[in-house]
Length: 74
Image (cartoon, rainbow, N blue to C red; front, side):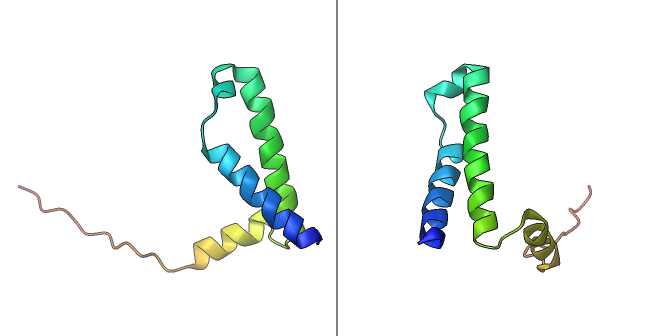
């Protein structure tokens, strides 16, 4: 039950942080609600066993899908 709640709250807080809302016009109020959403997202990640450090290490170890090509010079 706790994991289902963590997934639900994590997804909702991620969507809330991505979608702009009218409170972002007023800086302090916008910061407070975005901070609460970030805290919920971090709680849900920790509940599911996902730590930000491990997530970043996994992302760094993944092979890059883009290749850097040198642009021709004229």
